[in-house]
Image (cartoon, rainbow, N blue to C red; front, side):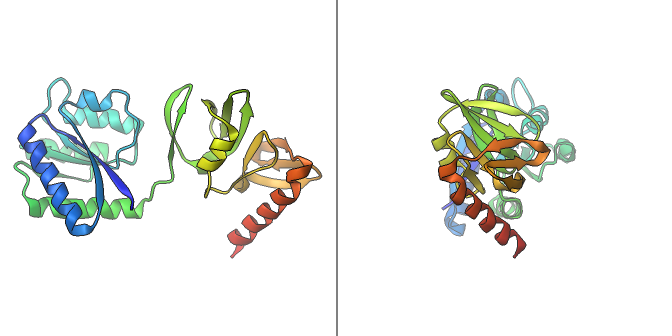
Length: 239
């Protein structure tokens, strides 16, 4: 079962508990599984933010940083998290379009209203399935779509991801990354390279050419399996 990660950012413990109670009831009704984390301040959520929440319930009136400013900061890091504001004041909530908030709820939150908004949130999650993975790199925790990665190479005790936009390193083995990328159309062409088959332009001899003219060596023991996997990939895309 998919676990939906939810953040409640609320300094009023009674309001936070009310939301948790609503979530518990909703999950029981719909047969869902929630992982709920409560933050009493927005700054606590933003500290070391890893873009790993599916839904964020955000109080607008918070100490140190208000919910609207926090939402703007979140949007710089995370475009897909579903934001729902919790507030006493409607005039602030309607500013939610600035940060692409899904909706808002007035305190105290009634279950009927909550269930309606949650159903909208679940529909959006279903309409926009996630295809990102979290990668701890030397640039910090990155949220990356495997579809944007051309290939991964090994270098000592690190691997280097070569994406469409840039490259970044992670302390890992190529075998562990191969397992992580299972299901995303990656395949090894030799012991050093894990290739995204979507970017393969051609195979000539023992060389595979990717978009952008990148040429990688195919090892003799892996060539047959690599070519067969590539042909299988092409056939599936043509169907």
